[in-house]
Length: 217
Image (tube, rainbow, N blue to C red; front, side, top):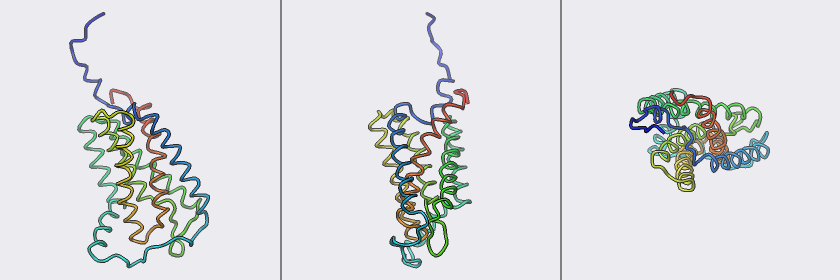
């Protein structure tokens, strides 16, 4: 058998978007999260009351400015900046599939929330569709991608890697979810729905990126 004395750069030119050790545990997470989204969608379909809503002007000035800044990251201009920076950074450091996943994962997560809102038809403040929260789904999706990159770089095993990824996603989802609830844009369960939407769609999107984008990308 011939020796491989030279290093094949294509072996690392496109590391997986979804680390192999996380495929099974995140598949379980995907199913569980999808069930939460479905159960909530059925429970809150057509609902416009019955859950606590933050006062529209309930935040003091310092927290209001912080919340507005965080909220901006989920708005079209802010999210475009976030995606451009993260996707560009991933591409430049050789994480080409992760660069694709940053765009695809966030896009699918926000797209699913956009499709679900008129179907569920849950409203807040007299007519604004609210379930699930697209801002929370966006923040969670981006955090998931970054956490999977970190878990892969740290060579974490399945249990530790899964816990790490979920904790990072939870922190990002909690921060954006708090923002949306504090600004009176969503019910708390809308934020939970957005968080679970991202958990449900990002891992299969990552699998699809790994499956259909070549290793020499």
